[in-house]
Image 1 (cartoon, rainbow, N blue to C red):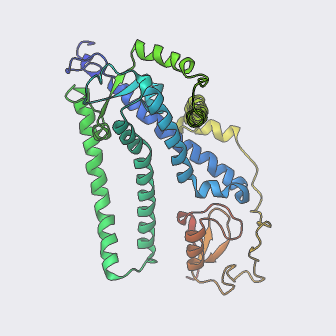
Image 2: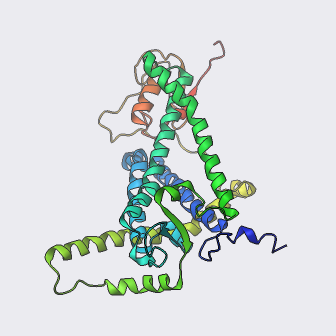
Image 3: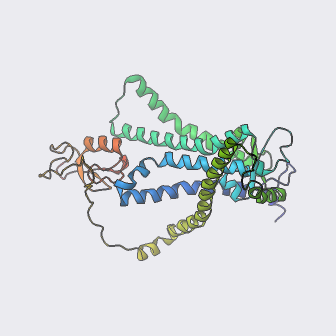
Length: 359
């Protein structure tokens, strides 16, 4: 039985340093759980204090990609691997060139492969997230018939909305076929992104581990014969490395906490959560008194707080419970991404259309 399943962890390419499919998929899923967890923490902070932490929610993608660039750059320079790859004892080696197999991990990747890997690790996921949010907004505008562009642009974005799901399906199929070929030892890569970066994943060797352990000792303290420019560059490098090391340490500890959260919010544990976390009814939303341009509630309940006219197409915000005209609420939420009265972070999907009994 073990002999029949041996092909899952071994390779017909006859190399011993090739990681198994389980290791490469596990390291990919590790970074996939970090961003949603941090996003949830930021959302909780923004809901608790919109005036102080609302900007974190609005600029979360940009802040996260900046920290991710810093973290991945540090690990690619120091370990020839991303954070998650180094966590599982892997490194990247170039596919072509002399001595690529014997290059120590602490020396980092060649410059061309380093920047390719950095772009594909940090910038490409950021662009994909922004594109998916843009598409979601286009679908909402299409569903509610709010966006009425001119004829050429209307044809373009409709074609884009129709083509993107098929493009995504082709990409996922390509990734799945690469993983199947990797399982059966027919390719060096489990992902097309590694192919585009010109690298492949291998296991760390004993020489790599010893060299990385000795690296801080060799670079500790600037030499006495260094110029001021070299000292400044070394200081900046150490500062960036210190920040990246702090981020990596926090992520390493947070990985185990994320596993606990995943179990805590699992479907099998929902009944236990409801009994342990039963809370009283929350108070009504608090008006933001810190804002200088704050809105005042109209005296009559049938008036919209934004236009102060009789509401048309009553729409409530799920985050605050206040009711507005649909067009007023849609325009304000789309522009500010928050409730105009409470400041709570709000998206377009939080708009709820209200129907009267006589309507």
